[in-house]
Image (cartoon, rainbow, N blue to C red):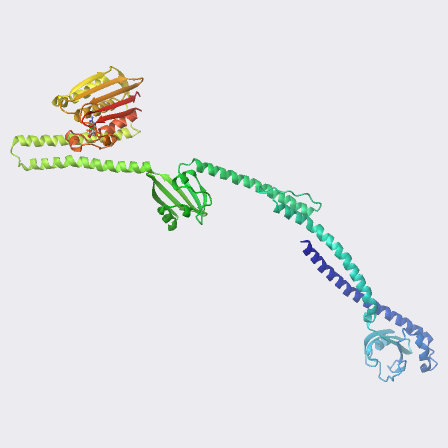
Amino acid sequence: MTKSILRYFIVVLVITLLSTCILSTAFLSHILLERTKQDMFYSLRLMNYAIDINQPLVNQIDQLNPLAYSSQSRISIIDKEGNVLVDTDDRQVSQNHLDRQEISDALLYGEGTSSRYSVTTKTNMLYVAYYDGNYILRLSIPYNGLIDELPVLIPALSMSAIGSFIIAFLLSRRLAYKISKPIIEISESLDHMSNDFYFHLKDYDYQEFQVIVDTLHNLSHKLRKSMREVKLEQIKIDEILKQMNEGFVLLDENYKILSINQQAISLLGQMQQYDKFTDKINNPNILDALNNHISKQMIELHIDHNVYACYISIIDLGTTLLFLDITANKKAEKIRSEFFSNVSHELKTPMTSIRGYSEILSQGIVKDQQQEKEMLSKIQNEVQNMSTLINDILMLSRLESKDIKIDISQLNVKKIMNNVLESYEAEISLHHLEVSLDIEDMIFKGNDYHIFTLFSNIVGNAVKYNVDNGKIMISLHAENHAMKLTVKDTGIGIPLSDQTRVFERFYRVDKGRSRQRGGTGLGLAIVKHIVSFYQGTISLTSELNQGTEIEVIILEQ
Ligand code: ATP
Ligand code: MG
């Protein structure tokens, strides 16, 4: 920078020197010309005094020479008509001189000057004429202005130009250094600026530099403030991403990872910021979706027995991927659709047989009264099955709905159990079952319909899935604001593989036997819901062909 300032100064210096030379030469030429003319007029006046008009001019002309301006001067005496009367030049001058500028001016104003190339002397001449009323006295000299003085002027001018150039150069260099030093210092400070935008600048005497320094300090302050805010925002975003249950990935236009949270890493595998996402990922569905370049899309991914909804959005910066665990939703959806298909299936079976029997009966084909009675009883049976099924479904939906208000009252559970046993009395005696009871006389706070349904389903199963002459042991006790019910039977038992599934809706180990006994497969599902309503626990132990034991503990409401 110093060099370019210096170069600029030198150019200015040279231009200044040249223009000074030209201007001063022109000025000097003018002064020289005026001085020469004055001196020549002075000589003419002296000569005029020396001339005696009564003596022949030819004789006097040589005596005038010493009074002339210089040794090369030519003196002419011309009459009013322009005829040269006498001339120091040896050559005969015959032309009329009235048309010469200096002569006509002298006749008009008393004095006249002119300069021109003289054909007579073949040089540039300066003419000065003086008119005293009788004749015109003219002095002429060869005159080239300053050119004649060049031998003297050139060395003098060159010396002074070199001298001024050296002095100006040294001063310019010093000035250039003084100007560029603060700029160099400021730019060096900016170069060494730390990552947190701190830099050190001293104060300067020049106001212009001080303004720059102050502006830079302000700028650095603003930058630090903005950086702090950006960092704070980054921390906030990182924290949000960390706390999110969903996996999140932000990619740039080239699929480089700009941000990824832990949840996404555990789903997709180890990867980190600035990794190329498409190189790290091996899930073809995600790669296909990214290649589609659709602004918003959702794909379903199955990762480690779980289902995820992956929302891919193209944004200004690049792409975002959001992974939502929808396993529970999918399961619920599956259960719902299974439930509806089961319900329609369960309703279709009794409806078909009802329609069949009623058609036969309506056509009057059956003549035997006994047969007719049997058919009617079968229709009644199927209607009963349907009504049980519908009641069970209603019960389940009521238990699942959180909005329905449930009446809670002090219940005599022993009485409820006796009612339940009463409802199974016919079956118990038909199969010669032996029921042993260990029931505590107690009061339990709950809903009577819930408790009746709970007992009825568990005891009902012990009856339905028992063997002839089998046993049922029922124990019911109060336990610290809770009630513990144990029902044990010596029935057909449940295979190990089915033991966890019997609580599912419509699940039946032996469908034929269950249906034959009017079962819908909803009993234990309802029991499970009731137990959960009372924040209780349920456990089942069973052995095939040996029997089953169910233990339920529910809390008072
Ligand atoms: P519902 O109770 O709706 O009339 P269900 O008895 O078939 O019909 P659940 O009570 O839910 O339905 O029982 C589901 C299945 O579990 C039954 O079909 C049966 O196969 C088996 N099961 C339940 N309790 C016993 C038990 N005590 N002994 C043997 N198997 C049982
Ligand atoms: Mg049952």
